Image (cartoon, rainbow, N blue to C red; front, side, top):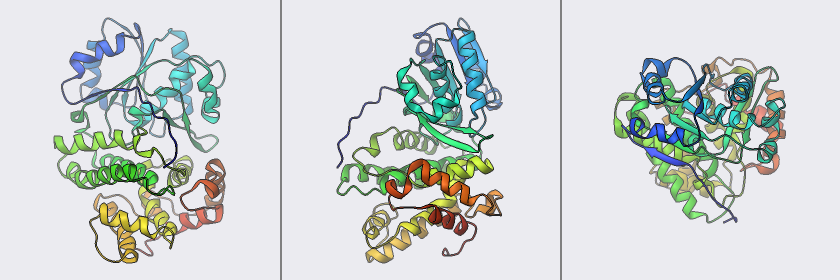
Length: 394
């Protein structure tokens, strides 16, 4: 097990009927001037927007609406201007991962006078400046951004989708599973696989005998596998939505990655798909993950894949067979969720950009050195191409 330091200062307010009694105090403790950040019209249709505005009626609330999925650097720049023009004290983000990701970078941008894209390209800049506190109300279980320091921001002009980190996690996160009842079947499925992918990236690690981490991940994986189909079939099943919401938070609040050795591989590859084709992140991950697993399975990794099969998918048999069957079980579950299993399912039917995408993914994260199994650009191109067919899967 590797050395680590761990601290997460986010206050979690979990469950239904807590926003009415606790939101005002959570926001106003930081000041009267609030930047309210949100996406489209869903929070207005649900009544959440009106509830929040009424609860904060005595505060000075400035709004930044229209945060896109795969949040754009232009939205962050707009937020930067508002924080400066209105002397904002606190950012309140209402939405899923995209909204909260943007809010966290906006919280840094108030204290930065340059181009906000600098803060994405060079996260160390954020550690040398002050940060606004962020309070969020989560409406989609997927990314775990509600309890971590990360954000992923897109620059469609340069075809870049890049993760950046700041010094702080959100100050307070409201997790009310009932707010996810109206999430569509598609977003529920994609969000569930996003959670699962975060776990996969941390589970398949070169550090031996990190049993606490592995056991935690296996338990959360089983939770997502169990409850995602229930949430799809019964959108207002509280237990399903609650388990997925907490699984999302636990999967990426830093806890289950402690003591690990290597970096992530599938996310950098998928970020290229989203940057070039603006697809749903969870869907891209679902397409790539089984192919990456196939690539990684070898004599050195077989035991880990066999443990994955036994402890997560409840498979039995010899290691070699269980390892292969575990990859097939993952693929079959993706199909069960109704997610696409090929790039054609997200309208990517040609390979024109694959080489540029592969080079950027490998170089950005040094996948040749840091991946669970070493990946060079040619390997990534091959994985993209294999993801255009169902070959190798039943």
